[in-house]
Amino acid sequence: MRFIEEVVVDEFLPTFRALLAADLRDRGLTQSEVADLLGISQSAVSKYVHGEVATNDRLASDDRVAELVARLGEGLSAGDVTPVQALVETEVLIRQLERGDLLARLHEEAFPPLSEYDGDFAVHDADSPVRTAERVLASVRRGLSRLENTSGFAGLIPAVGSNLVEALPDADGIDDVAAVPGRILDVKGRATVPGEPEFGVSEHVASLLLAARAGGSDARAALNVWCDESMVEAFTDVGLTAVEFDAEASVTTAVRTAIEEQPDADVVYQTGGFGIEPAAYLLAADAVAAVETARQLV
Image (cartoon, rainbow, N blue to C red; front, side, top):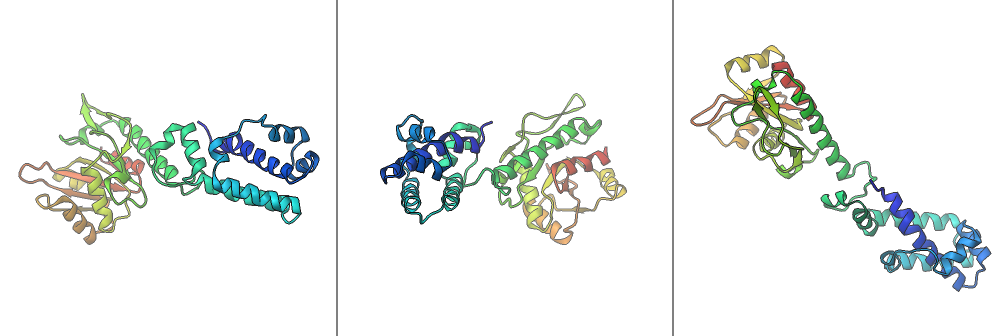
């Protein structure tokens, strides 16, 4: 891992200090005065001014960096700007450059896995989409781990296979839903997961979850299992609220309608139709909770 703070320390700070030290020297300040203003040693000032410190050309040529250097250089040399104000102004620029801007791009180059995430974000933001997405993926991984270690779950897997999905908080399409690529299958009596969870790899179960959410469900996760009359009875026996939807109708429309009538449902199910295998979909707050529900039915 490489943190964005390392990029700031290794790339931004040497470049910014070199530019600002040179600007202040050009305005007639001594090395000692520059050192006092920047809070660094005179030898460091000398290295910055004489180009003995490696700098980043992309940062040095950025108009916003150049403008701030000139403004702070003028203010510090005239006494109109204090070192504290200079620090605050610089921190503001750093935060700006970190949010989907030049420092963010340098960070992606230093740590390529970040390039998988689109959009302007600050990686250290508590509400960062990267953090949210990684938490959803981690939740699905935990759920899959429990599922693989649940004796008897393979018996709940329908012929078409199962999938465990979890949506981002503001999901509006299947690309916002993490799931198993392919399906979870019963291989010799053991639930077998074919790969690591990803976003956008489940069409059926993800679409059903989104339809349930559109109908008013608070669920962010779903797991599909085999269903028959005995399973419907089992839902009631373990205290789950189940609602049936029309297997012959459009799944998304039918599920949405069913949830609108029973928004607190824990399970939506259909008992089959022509060429349609009966199935139930366990709805839960997250992937782990969906698996815990399934464990009650084993």
